[in-house]
Amino acid sequence: MKGTLLAGVVLTIIGVILLVYQGFSFTERKTVVDAGPVQVQADKTRSIPIPPIVGWIVTAGGVVLTVAGLRTKA
Image 1 (cartoon, rainbow, N blue to C red):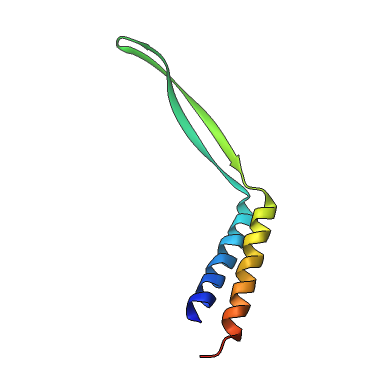
Image 2 (image 1 turned 180 degrees about the vertical axis):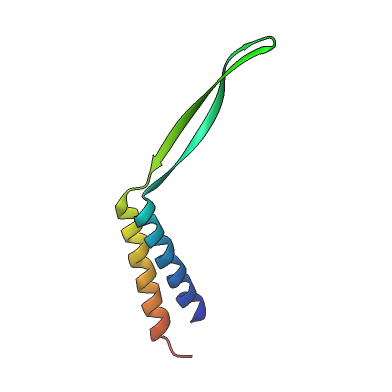
């Protein structure tokens, strides 16, 4: 009972966070030229989008688990 309720609440929170942020980005540093003591590095920013449908599915699953956890009797 409590496990289902807890999992539902956690999934709901994660789903809402996914809906708000819809992706993340990070910076990757690569060495372009390595000629003895001389090194040239370049920073490249990459972005990984998360479709809103994923957030909606996770949120809906969390709500279903929360309701199921509340309906079960101890």
